[in-house]
Length: 297
Image (cartoon, rainbow, N blue to C red):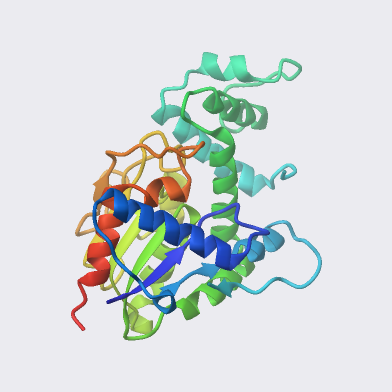
């Protein structure tokens, strides 16, 4: 059986790494039961790099020692982060058909806003308008985007997270990587850059609720190539998950061979983005199970 590496998303600070890992494992077991199959994965074969506290402290420039990555309300953003978030919000507005009238109706009545993403009050009003769409979550979009920006644009944060995630991989050992949200960006970036050099064998990558196809993220990650050694890439998303704006298809994320996308699911967590809602789906759980058992060793 292959090893299993689980890469979590954002908003995991101040949590116990062992408890969080168990939450993922229990959700996967429920998904397997929903699929009428079982699989006993030994705990020692499940790697769960926990970087929640690391990201939180570095992103907020908090004093004190940076917490190690464990293997088991923002103020006004900077100009660069505002520009990045504005681009993501504008894409979400277009994708979900939110009108300028909807945005103005959601604006703070004490603030005059001008149309366009260069106007920060417009961005905040657009996030409120997104929140008013049933099933969408503007706050989730803003927070995930902020953390993706921190990881991609701040080299110190990227280095600290990756130094902690890297030991989860064993050179020459086959593994299945299951990544969620921000974790999909980290997984893709590291695998594209390091898999061949480090002899990481990841024949199957499963991405859940991924923002990888968002235009601003694609632009930063170019050239968009399929990471070395990945034979099977399965991407699942709820169409109402505002973080996963687009499928990882040729129009939005042109890798060759293409990614298998699955949108036929409803994530029943409150913001349609939570990891348990993805892992509990029978098709997602079965794909992970089949990938773990398909070892050639």
